[in-house]
Length: 111
Length: 116
Picture 1 (cartoon, rainbow over the protein chains, first blue to last red):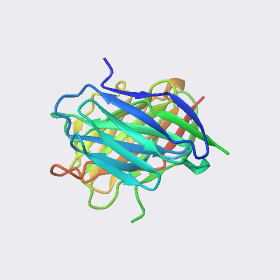
Picture 2 (picture 1 turned 120 degrees about the horizontal axis):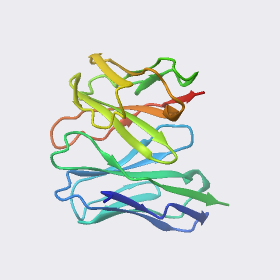
Picture 3 (picture 1 turned 45 degrees about the vertical axis):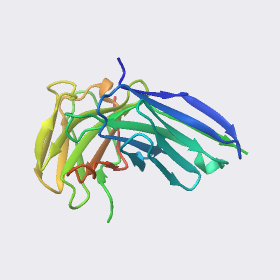
Picture 4 (picture 1 turned 180 degrees about the horizontal axis):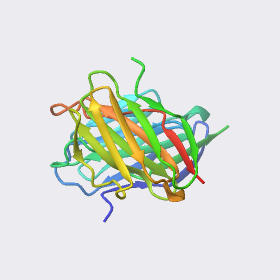
């Protein structure tokens, strides 16, 4: 069973059309949930870390939230430059320092 | 800080040849990770080190793959002999890796490996 599942796999939005990406996880005792952005040909770029249910973090047009079973990355009034693949990852108890990544949501924002 | 540095950025080689990928982590980071990314399998952890010691190599595909970290500022991932199915982008990442926080990983630009 996959521990980290992201949906949708791909999302196409018009500029200004707000939406949310989902990351659900089956890990018990989550130590941390991480969001990354990856542009084509580049390494993943760290965005946020969330540690406990109810926590929220914001950066420009992005807001990440966390519940006991899932995390959402809300994108408000997106612009074409927000187009990228968004990855989430979890840090498990007893897993040391390693992260388990989901397969990502490929976001395209069009004019 | 220059961030995580990887070399080479691109490598094209023939099947059977030895390939060595290099990584310099962010200064002061205690944990180093090697990943492989493909369209089919996404981002897979191959191996990670804490304080230069290999902790988990369960993701290393087979004996053809080996990794070393001789000091805190340098690591290598070696494939010998290489096969076409090894073609992928290989990323190195590092993190502070201490305490309850500080586990966010910072990635290098990757090495795109093509084995013909």
